[in-house]
Image 1 (tube, rainbow, N blue to C red):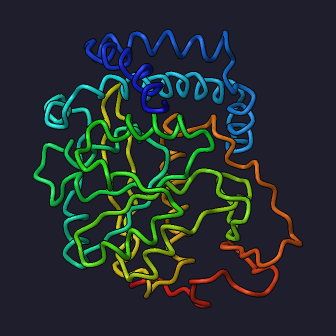
Image 2 (image 1 turned 135 degrees about the vertical axis):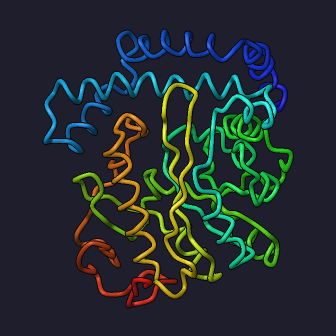
Length: 330
C-alpha cells in the first residue's frame, strides 16, 4: 500500500519533471513568494535564526537574506523534481554541478578504502543520489560506491518517498542511502571495499547527543556519527561544501580535515567541520537551511557527560570512542 501511495505521488512529479529547467525556476520563484508572503512557512523560525546568527547585520540586511533563502529553498524543491527524469550525464552536460578540486578526494581514496565526507545543508543536497557523476572531470569514483547516512523518519510512507526521490539518479539503490542506526553494521560488512560515506551533520541531533559547540553565536549540540566512524576505522575525513553560484549552478569544493581521524582525535574533526561550515555560511548566508530548527535542543549544564568542544567537559566522563587528547595534524 505504501509503495502504491508513493507512486500515486511520484507519477505526477515525473510528468512535471519533463519541463525545462527554466520553467522549474519560474515555478520556484512563485513558490518562494507564496511560502514567504502568503503561507509564511516557518517565517518566524527563519527570522529568529538569522537574528541570532547575524546580530551585527541590520534588519534590512537580514530580510534580504531571508528573501534569497526562500528562492533558494524553492529552487531545491523544483530542481529535485526536474532531476527525477534526468540521468547524471545529462546533468553534467548542463553544467549544474562542477567539482573544483576532485584530486582531494582522489588522494583520500588512495590512502584508505573508506572515506568519510562531512557536509552541511548547502547547495542542493537533494542531488546527492548522483552527485559524484555530475562533475565534468573524470572522477575517481562513481555513485555506486557512495552511501549517504540519514535519520529515519517517523512516517514510513514519507521515508519511502524520500528514498525514491533521493535514489532517482543512483543505480545502487540498495546502498545509496543507509539509516544512521544501521551505518556501523553496513561499514563492517563492506570493510575493505572502496566506499565513500556522506554525513550531513548540521541538523539538530538526537536529544541524547553529548557534544556541544558554539555555532553561529549559539550553543548547539552536535552529532558525532561521522567523526566516530572515521576515528574507529582510521579513515580520512573530508569536508565538502556545495556552493550556489546561481540558480541551477553549484560548485563542490573539498577540504581535507584529516588523513587518519584516529590520529587527530574526534574533537579536532568535529571542530574543523563546524569551523569550515560556519565560514562558508557567513560567506554566502542564503545558501543554508535557515528554516530548520537547528537550536531547538537546550543545553542543560547539569546533564551528565556533556562534552564541550570549545571549552570544558561537564560531567566528567568522555563520550565513547574519542581520545582524551585531540592532536592537530601537522
